[in-house]
Each structure stands twice: as structure tokens, then as C-alpha cells.
Length: 140
Image (spheres, rainbow, N blue to C red):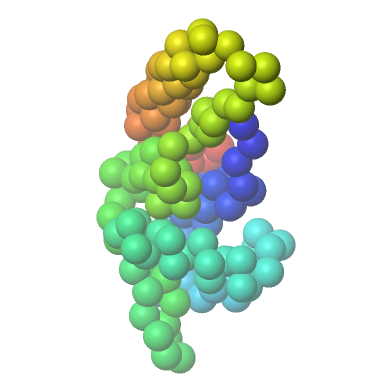
């Protein structure tokens, strides 16, 4: 299944906010700065930040000295936190409609749903193991 580019953009935004917080002495980072550095439109940054704010990952301040900060250290922000802030519901759609009626079709659906749930659980466990600090340390 393909996910929106917002997931990878949100990870980049989190890392860039941390870099800029360190560079600016923990002052708020403007959405325009984020958009310019990441070469994505300001409205896209704003939309992603709304999701991150709602999840408690970032915090914002309006006004001339406003912008965004991380609400907690990057060592406490997992990829799963970011993923769940952006993607809602189940990861896999398991709706199956058979053209040919078959008494086994319900069983097929149950097996498929079980397999997809196992995959979703494994992915979430993997994302929960990696923090933004892990990524920042690997690239820094």
C-alpha cells in the first residue's frame, strides 16, 4: 500500500524543526522557513503541522515571533507517533467482493484480514522502535 508523501515530509519537518531550534537557540521556526528549506508549499507545511499539533508532537505560536517548536525532545518522538498523526484508521483495506459466489468467500476474507492485521501490527512495532533522534544521529 502506498502512503501519502506527507508521512516522509512530516519526518523531515520534525528533523528540520529540531535543527533550526538548535541553530536559533530554541526560538520558534516559521512555516515559511520550513517550506523554503524543504521545497514544499507553505499550505502543505501548515496542513502537516495541524496534524502534528493535534497529536502533541509540535506546538505553535502565532504572531511576528511565532512559528512552530517541537513539543518534546526528538528522542521521545517515534516514527509511529508521526505516522499515526497523519494516517488514520487501518493501514490496509481488506474489502473483497467476489464476482463468483463461493461458500468459502467469508473464510477467505477472514484469512486475508488476519494477514493484513499481522502486517499492520509488525509495521507499527517497527515504526515504534525508531525515533527522530535515531534518524538525526544517522545523518548528522
